[in-house]
Length: 340
Image 1 (tube, rainbow, N blue to C red):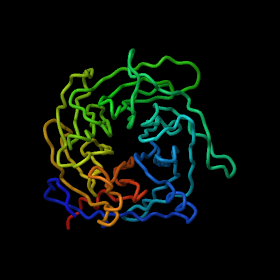
Image 2: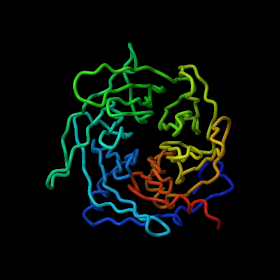
Image 3: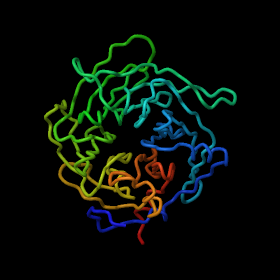
Image 4: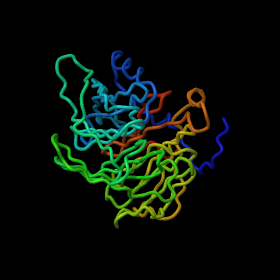
């Protein structure tokens, strides 16, 4: 296998850190029919995991339990909901606003806010309407190809969110009501300079740093969020050494960033022990999460084949990864940094 990127000094076989998954044959069949996946997201309480059914215009919410009784945790997947809606059009990215609201970025549509329905009887598939849909990027512009979303802050009434408008090459900011009924939204374009297909976005826990996967420049751009962002702002830092960055997440303490590389079988890990993400950063670990055969099956072009979605649970111990060829896999983060 020949991947044309510079590898860091430490490459880790992710197989040694794989976490066992307890899943029934029925639930395994549900996972197997996901098809093309994109983003993946734990709910704030760690009890649900959202995954895109991109080609099916569905969102899947899996009930998960992380058992920490042993030295290495185990993951139990015991139920699910499937959300379907006319507002879902190539659902690509999600974030939770609390445990009961899901915000979905639809690459061929708009950004939709859903109230997660309660499970009743044996019904697992729910056809629902969104609480609201975000259509505008500003006073005179509409949102375009929204692919990824992150919640900067939220309470029970409103959420402040950032959205990657993939093929418009910009980031927009929205203040959106989380309750039904009429509510005036606030929308504006916040970043455009240097962006070339922003394909993933994350905000550090302290809200100081915004990380954006810049698909066509083979790096992640870091912006300083302490002052009011402007379209002309330059990134203050970069995460380098990645082929085609896609999903990305900060660790709960903000000292690491995990980046899924859609163009290689890797997740790259970056560190800023003092929490300062200014300047260039190289990976401190590159984790192989796909074997050669699985990677080649999905490599229909140089930009595909690798992992797409990534998330870290609230403890920082469990990393979840998804792509079409391997819909769901979990890794024990401390084992990736163990000696040997």
